[in-house]
Image (tube, rainbow, N blue to C red; front, side):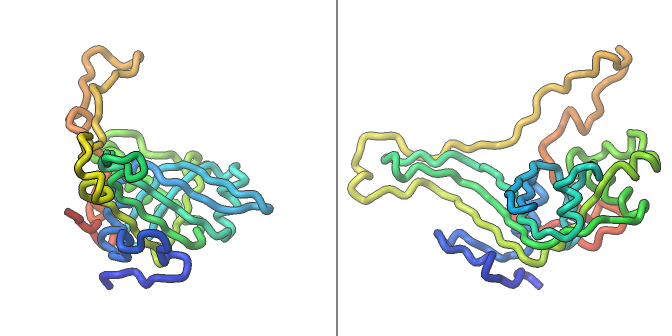
Length: 235
């Protein structure tokens, strides 16, 4: 199915023309983000937790400590709203009122469930690691059984979701186009710096190629054993 069915919660009220229910676009935004924010309510109080995530097929995974009261509540079925945002540029208009950003965002609603199987946990943590930096899992020590037990992995189906995107130049009031003010878009992107070695690293150890050539997250879900589809591609 190319589109995710829209619901009352995912229907956009403001600037609905920027909204999309295209599954490939929603997957792409989730795949390119380094961090998500998980919002929920516990005991009448709102919480928003920033955390890392990964998409495998039509499910979104995030993790934390089982000792976290808030994450435990999420794992027990509390409704969540997960959001990610990618900033692509600053939109500089001729008037202060029309300044904006070019961006891609996605929002997913639902109830997360804990992943119980150690094998499934390991698969998700591999996907999570390679989502952040592809190739890393193959070089590091994998989690021990004790470490797996100390990790809460939550799974959220991507069944109620939407995306919102802004692209293009500023949109000014017609009379403002004659103003002698520069207007346009300042592109914004993720850029990695030079790797900084751990002080306890052997002097002969060199940074791996995937660290030297890092260009952001987004390891294809199809590269992860057991995944059922690759992420969508959006130009």
